[in-house]
Amino acid sequence: MKRNLFVLSGILIIASITLVFEACKKPDLVESTTEDVNIVGYLDKNPDSFSLFRQILERTETSAFLNAYGAYTCFAPTNSGVLTYLQGLGVSTVDAADLNTLKDMVRLHLLSDTIYTGSFTDGKLPVITMYGQYLVTSVTNKGGVSSYIVNRQAVVTKSNVKVGNGIIHVIDNVLLPATKSIAQQIAEKPEYSIFLQALQETGFYAKLNTIDPDTSKKWNTVIAESNQALADSGILSYAALKARYSQTGNPALASDSLNMYVAYHVSPGLKFLGDIITTPTHDTWLPQEVISIKLIDQDVVVNQDVFNGVLEIGVKLERTKSDLAATNGVWHDAKSHFMVKYRKPTALYWDVSSFEEIMKLPAYYKRANYNFARPTEADKPIKDHYWGWGPLAGTNTLSYLYSSASSITNYAYNSDINMLPMGLPNRPVWWEMRTPPIIKGKYKVWLCYRQQKQSSGSNMLCQVEVNGVLMQRTMNFTETRPAGTDSELEAIGWKRYTENTSNLWAAKQVGVIDFTTTKQQIIRITPLVGTQNNNNLDMIHFIPIDQDQILPRFKPDGTMIYL
Image 1: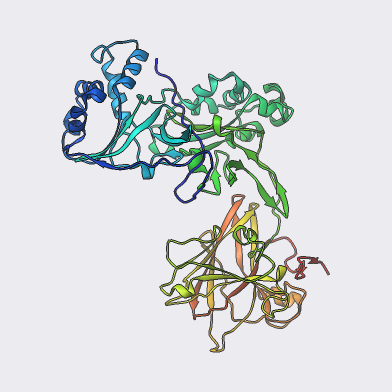
Image 2: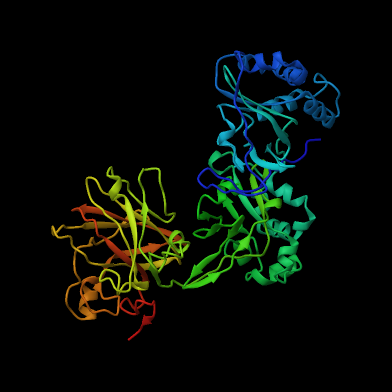
């Protein structure tokens, strides 16, 4: 009988993040080139290893196209692996096996592209198999020897064998496709019985038990909660879960909080752990609500965020019980119970200079200046600060400036600022930042900066976009704050945001934005006129439209002033 496809989650390795773990490293595999014209020719020259797989190709009429020109990747199981596979089917020969089963088996082992081990990560391969399911690779280390594993089922014993029409990776077992839906797999595990009943009562079980004919909706990702995870939060039965959340008494209603609880645990799309960590937020089936994701050490953590200066501890995903592939998606295990949190819009007074990369440099953070260079367009030294690359490498540097004495930083929040050259034709042509999470609602957006005009008297007129929406007003890093009372200034889109009264310290309101989803937002500053090296950005304020826009002001030590 076919068994479920379980995918190794292992240690997370993604192409854009290099993580080195003592217990596991990628194997050193050497490409080899044969004189064979094609994949079939290679199998024929090695009958001691592949005669049975060769018979399967012949019986399924696959040999013809694998014997012709093309670009394929073949995961070729050895004879011992095929024998074990046939025993699992209850037959002793290839001819005795069900033909359709063999066709599915072959399609699962073939990709319509050449994929070398350099593309193997802890996650799905970039190209789907001819069977229509993704293969997932990872690395294991036993006795100091590292090996690639495919689908938690087979070890790669020889890799990157180049032939005329593609690449061959030799594996020691036959790969088995997933044959059951996410819902069916959860139903088979009694340790998820409470979550299962919630799926059934809300109607989500039926949705997760089908394959949508619309390919854009075929795949989904579920984060399931075990009975133990629920018990740790005082929920010992489905009745207790329903009593806590079902305010209408009918969990099938979209407006019922139990329905919302389940919807919040389902995300559209196929997302293995290696995929999840590449994006800071993910949509869910609960409209306009997202989960946030952080990779902390080796842990994938859901909803660990800072709101209004308070750290909210998130929920870890259990890697050894996650990355479970199904016919219509993949599901993961949450170590703890979590539910969407509904919050009122709250002001964010964002210090743009307090970002992870500088805070990890104690010799510089709140101590000294530091330059983050971007000598090539491929470089990205700061995760949440990104700027358009210009052809003069010397101008592609974001400077973290700190000093309690310098006139440029002495009255800045925490006495530090970010400075970035901008302007055509040679300097960065935009400056983009990802904010901390902002609660959904309508906000006024204020850019807080220290005016500094170059000796040439340059101009630095900029437009601002938030999540791609153009703000109603421009701003200019070389412009000083106008004179006037607080109310007069606010009426024309200005305010004083520091305790210092100098008009060099200015906050410009660039517009109003309605955030429909609580998550990290994207703000982009684009120069329209001028070239300026010293653009000094201190803070960005996102303040709900019905709250005080003027107060608090800020002292250099971060103290808020409400008078």
